[in-house]
Every structure is written in C-alpha cells, then in structure tokens.
Image (cartoon, rainbow over all chains, first blue to last red; front, side, top):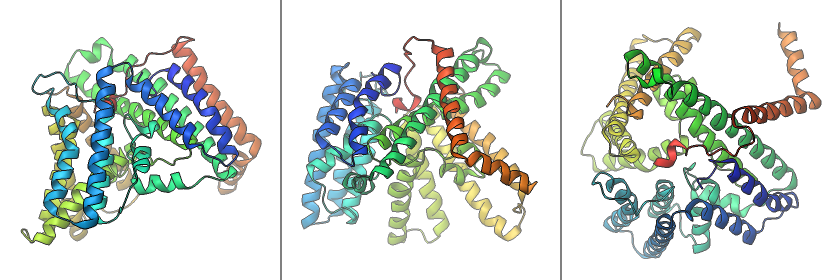
Length: 382
Length: 52
C-alpha cells in the first residue's frame, strides 16, 4: 500500500493516531507507541513486495553501518579521500537503482523512498565532515531515517532540526496548534490530490484530444501537466507534513506558491524546496567553496555558473537517466545562468525597472517558462 | 474603501465566523470527495514523485 494513495490508508492512519493525539494533549510522547506507528506504516508500504522489504532492511543496515563508522572515524581523522569514499558508498544503492533500468535488468535493489533516505544519510555524513554534527546514536539515526510520514517522497528534513523536535515535547497549547495545522494540511492534501489533480488528469490529460499529440493538444497538455504535477506533489507533501505535525514534528514545507514566482531563482525557492535547498547546500555551496579554495578559476561568476550547471544536471539525472530528465536539468541550468547574467547586467543598464507592471509581467513570463520546463520533464517532447 | 476592508477583515476574524468558514471548507472537500469517489475506497494511482 503506497502511503497516502488510498482512503483505507487514511483510515488506518486515523486509528493509529488516536493514542498519539491523546498523549499529545497530555503533553506526553510515547517512543514505544510512536515506533509501533512507524513499524505499521512501513510494513503497509513494503510488506506487499518481499523484494522491497528485504531491500529496505538491507539498505537501512548498510547506511547505519556507514554513518556509524564515519562518525567514529571522524573523531580521530578527517581525510578527504575517506569522506568521498563514504559518500560514494552511501550513494551506491541509489546509483544501482537508477542504473539497472537503463541496462534492462529488473530492479531488485530499489524500494519506495530510496532517494529520500539517501539524501538524509548523505546529509548526515557531510555534516559530520564539516563538524556540524558530532555524533548520532543508533536510536537517533533510526528515528530520523525511519520517520514514516515522510518515508516515500520527503520532504527532506535536516537531522539537527528533526532532533530538536524529537527532544522537545510540545505544551498542550502548542500541540493543539500542531494538531489543528496537521488536520488542515491533510484536508488540503485531499483537495489537491484527490480532487484537483484527479479532475485535471481525468478531464483534461487523459482525454483523446490531449492524447492526440497535435501542436494544440501539446500546448494545452503543457499547462495541464504542470498544474497536475503541482497538485499531485503538493498534495502528497501536505499529507506528509500534516501527519508529521500530528506526531509533533514540524517537517519543513515543500511548496510556497511556486506559480507566483517572479523569476527562476524565486521559483527554486518555492518549488520542491526541501530538495532544492538540499542541492543548494550540499552540492552548489560546497562546489563553489571548494573551487574558490583551489583557485583554479578566478572569476567567481564562472565558478557560480559551473555550480548551477552541476546542481541542475545532478537534479535532472536524479529524476532518471532518460533524455527528457537530463534535458529538464540542463534547461533549468541554462535558465538560472541566463537569469543571473541578466540580473547583473540589469543593475547597470536598468532595462527592467521594478514596479507593479513589471512584477506582474515577471510572474506571467516565469509561469510560461516553468510550464515549458515541465513539458520537457513529462517526456512528451522526446 | 479602507474602512470597508477593515470591517470585512474584522468580520472574518470573529471566532464563530472563522469556525463556520473552516467547517464549510472541510465539508466542501468531503462533499467533493464523495461526488468523485462515492463510498468506494479509492485506489488512486501513486504520486508522481514516488517514482523517483
């Protein structure tokens, strides 16, 4: 059973959450009961496919061994080669999962949510390398990795932030607010996923006219698919965040009105935020810092542009090795670099002045540019 | 215009109005679900991002 994809899942979730809510109102948290909730949800997600369940267990053991080993090693030494080797080893299961379909080999390694668990593990290893994270006990690691509301597709939380929530038991009033927000989020998820996304898919995308692949149908499909993708993913995120809130964890937001973005930079601060911030912090920033330290390229803008290229190329490839995903990544890299260049030049030339009219125009232009990106992403073009 | 907006804002901040609006919002969503799926349990397809 895929989390949040059926009403029966919500019924089970509702029953499981009753003791959590009662305890929350009493300003208590039962680690044993919460673990049981996670175990039930994980079993629901993986038990129907024994390959997935085995892969999931082996994966968790593998990542825990890696993180623990690196934490112990980091107390003594800090060799760059060892760090890169550990990051690579943490990425191996995900790389295999992405590569097997390309080689037409059945994927027995992958399971639902492997990407998001990998982001969490790699983040912990990098934070240990930087000294931002000194230790993480086995219990803390498992609580972070196996937090069931966000297991299948995020949002990607940060270990330290998550840990803070785990260590703090909300007061009655704080929990009442969390519960209220959680229920609100779940209802928003119903509206997005089961009503709006369903209607867009059923009444527009799946119609014979749109499936006909004429220029007009592709044009309409571009907007319909963009909205469908948003309501589908934002719906999922609302469910995951809502369930987290009910469990007393303030999982970060994934979306903030992305179609109201004024430019492409603004868009990536509003769309799939937990992933884009992860790539910004752990790929782009690290790359730029590393390049500046090495001084191989003097021009900081060139370094920044290579960083953008790397970030979006990796983001594209992460979705899959199919051409349309790679093209999607490169398209956004090109947009980001072009916009950054334009923004710099505009400061000198003052072509695009800031006022209400240009702001509205910027939102309209950005919307169409983004939708074209989603058309590439959908794989309909090639 | 400013006074009118202020009055509307104050009206929507009244606890019973807030409660009614929220309840109507939840009920409308439930009604929408009922209209689309009836009393059958939906077997909606997975989320797009589950694939990644």
